[in-house]
Image (cartoon, rainbow over all chains, first blue to last red; front, side):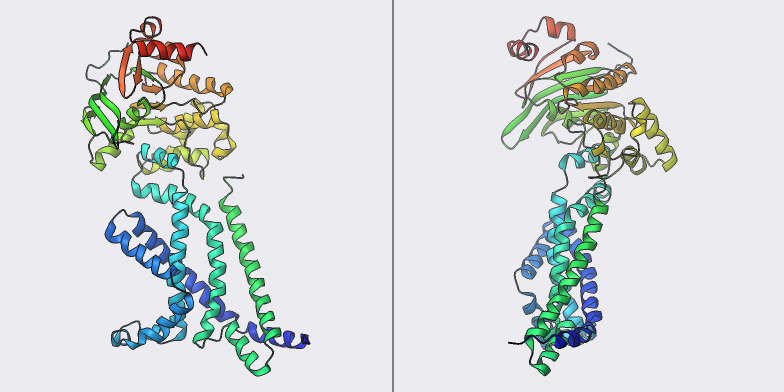
Length: 229
Length: 250
């Protein structure tokens, strides 16, 4: 078969029009997901079953099902309920963008909460005991000792999740959103050249992955300056 | 022995501690007066660490009573934190906050717990860093210091809280031999200044020169208690004799 390079050079600028949407999906979901992750983490660390259990169930459900299915359930499934249509969330859930952000946020929130928990569990017990012995309250211990150390420990796993999230934004194209993947699919439908177009698309995602990796690498080095000063 | 005050600063009455079905402390009774220096020794697993960890409530006891400065240790969080402020603790593995510079390590609890303002906390921190002879390391991170230096910082960090009592849990066991003396030197200086100290250690030279009393613990009990002279020269209990022969011949 022939590989048509002109198709690549033509399609890349067109697909890049969707970068804005891809980034919106990515950053919005990452921020909402992170807030959710911290809330879920605190619920699990609270030691109270009526907070811990719901968090665990939530995490289990969202880690145990494919994001694509979650997106479909939220976009196609929820509007079946009148209560949803009548609720204040309807303006968000009515839109594919809102549905996609919601699904991605809930999903990444579940994963990141587990990543952060791993970081918290990695904090040296002796250091926490020292803080306790100095009279720090449980809250002070968490804010000044656990959180900063756990953050550093969680960065490598978190950067992985962030990259997964970036790639998962492509699923939004299944509910009519014109992100980079959505545009690529439209071009393929017109040109019948899936090979060139999707390879171009893959390369764009790879470049973004590279940039994200580098950024997190820097962040990790910054946060680790006390380990390798 | 210093007899400045008649009411004991630390009082343990029939203290019991269980870890599951294992009894780590069996009816421990102990009184420590202000200014007294107690050295606790004994084989590993004998309950020495558990005992001093109960004194600042890092472990909670299951029976008996513990009084610090006349106040009983209970589950009341407020009381526990008030007592912890008066009781400094130094750990075997230093346990400095790895993500903070030395000076920040010394300032944190002063600011958060004692509510001391930043310049004053810094001043106190520098004062104690000078006392443990490493003011030049103030802006480094713990990982950049040797073990002996880290342990001296840990001592300074505890002293910054101006505690009434200092507890030491095997402070030199994790150190390379050449660094032990620099830590013991700081502890000896502290003892001379009249600090009330309970030290779990196997440094018998330190016990001999500093301790008012030496306790020998085995299987969760205080087996023998005597002044260092009597303890080392004329131990009464067979288990003490055996233990001393083991550590002193090496």
